[in-house]
Structure formats: structure tokens, C-alpha cells
Amino acid sequence: MSATSLLTPLKVGALTLRNRFVMSALTRNRAIKTVPNDVMGEYYGQRARGGAALIVSEGILVTRQGTEWPHAPGIWNKEQVAGWRKIVDTVHTNGSYIYAQLWHVGRVAHPDAPEQKLAGTPVYAPSAIAARGGKFRHIPGTPGYVTPTAVEDPWTLVADFKSAAINAKEAGFDGVELHGANGYLVTQFLDSTANQRTDQWGGSVENRARFGLEVLKALVEVFGENVALKSNPAGGYNDVGMPLQETLNTYTYFLNEADKLGLSYITLVRHVHDIEIGGEKRATAHDVLASYRSSIKNAKVFLNAAVSLEEGSQLVAAGKIDGVVIGFNWITHPDLVKRVQNGKALDNIPDIQHLQWGKDDRDLDVGYTDYPVAQY
Image (cartoon, rainbow, N blue to C red; front, side):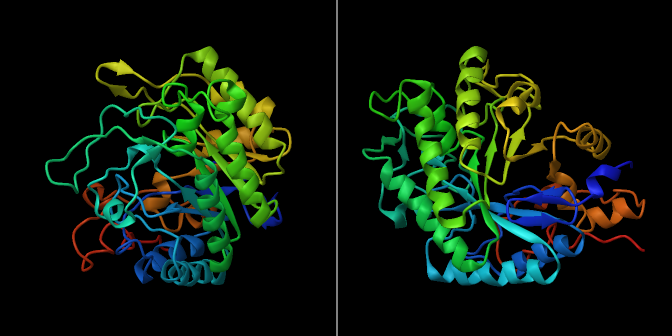
């Protein structure tokens, strides 16, 4: 494995990273009733010990929602903040930094999910347009997506993100990453197939980009330059995707304006495969690095999605990106960077059955914290 340039330090916002290996946000569903726990602390601590320069937490829900992912953690109350504080302290003790990825699923929540019932609020989205598909395995009958309620005042959702950032600051996180990808709330506002508002939050490219930009501004008010964005213009997940030219116009504007806010980094998630729903391809396949790199002049640029170590190292050496965001290999190799540094193979076998969890708290560690480290 040739990854020489990935092993060099990098200044990101106010932080100096020891290398350019970033651990992607990975939803693993180990929180008990939305509260992070000690097993999660061990999971993140292992990967900090394994050399991760910057860890991006799994998606953290900014409000109580009926997410399609059960057992996802939140950050809207004191118990959750205390749980995250222990995890953050563990990561810091083991030499890494950690950003909280702030997440709102928007229209892909479900009103019958336990947390949504407790919230006592509708499933909110930019417009009353249901996503096609969906399968909520934790709800009887495995229903699909429902038609959401169009949020009357999106500023209330901006305020939810800011409140979550304040809580993340209290928990000790080094920064926050806005989950602006994969068909969740920020993408729903950006995408004209999900947003058909006629007010200042919809219609033109500028109006559809407004929500994500206002959320980023609110986060910057809390964390300054240690705010980041994850964006997936080519993804198609959760039934979003516009024609190519509209996609290019929308994301070129959005990323250009986001970059003016003094963000620490922007992660571009590249196209991997087409997402088919009802026989239609929703993903808008195009080269995100070639299409949007020139729009990002200030923030560091990270690339995510099936980036090999060799390719990532070559792209860094060529000045096309500043670092790589790695997902699956961090799941299966808690000592990923140490293996790369010492020429060890990435040969742990993934426990696919236990990637996600949804049984009881007796097997939280299975397929989670039980992957072996190499012999050094």
C-alpha cells in the first residue's frame, strides 16, 4: 500500500491533523434510547488509537425524530451531551480530534417510529412530497416513506441545528460537520424534486440553497472555523436527483457560497453506482471532483466513496484533494493507519450481519469493537 502523502500533517481549521486519514461518519446503531454509551466510547477510542487524525461521528440527530435508522444517537438533551462528553474525552486521550456530524433526516422519518411519537411533531420537509421507496424494518409491517408536512418556518429548523451545535460544544467536540448529503434535510431543500416551495426557501437555485447556507452560518456562530460540510451531488440516495445541468448549477452555487463562510473542510462524496427506485435511476452520475473542485477555494477538500489508499495518495500529491475520508476500512480495521504505516494487510473479514444493531444491549460489541488489531 503506497500512501506516503496521506501520512503527512495537515492544518484543518484551527486544528493540525497528524495525517490525512479521516474516519467517515458511519451509522452503527449502538445508542440505547438515543443516548451514547461506553461501548460507543470504546469503538471511537480504538480508532483514535489506530491513528485516525480526525474522526467524524456517526450522524447525530439534532432533534427527536422518527429516523429510518433505529438506535441512532441524539444531542438535544443533557444526558446525551454527558454521554458524548465521555466519548470525546476518550478520543482526545488517544490522540485524535473528533467532529460531530449533525443530522436531520427530514421526510425520510416515519410518524409511527417510537422517537417520532415521543417528539409529538409531524415529519417535516421542505414540501409535502413523499420520497419513493423506504423500508422501516423496526416498524410493524415494514412501511415505506410517508408524505411529510411542509415546514411552515424553516428558521425553526435552523435553530434546531444551532442548538445542537451548542450542545456539541458543551460535549467537547472539536468541530461539527453538517450532513448535507444522501437525500436528508439539507439535500431535500437543495433538490427541486423534493422542494417545490414558492417562498424564499424554494424555486431558484439561490432560494433552494438558502437553508443549507443559513444552517452553516448558524454553526459558524458557535464553532467558528471548525465547521465542515459533507455534500453528495451525484448520490441519488433517498429519492433525490435532478437533471445534470440543474445539478451542476445548484451545487456549483451552493458549494461556492458555502466556501465563502470560512469552513474548515468540504467533503465531496463521489458517484459510486446508480440508485434505482421504481425502475428509475435517480442518481446523477458525474465526476464531483472535476465538477466542483474549482468552486472550493478556501476550505480543505476531502474525497469520500471507494477511494483506495493509492488513489487518495496520488490525488493528494497532485494537489487535487487534501485528504481522504474512509468508511468501510475503518469499520473492519480499528488500527487502519498503523497498518498502513507498518505495511500490514487490511485483511479483517467484515461481519456484515452485525454492521447495524437492533437486538439488545448484550451484543453491542459484536461486529463493532471486536475486530482484531495487527501484530506489530
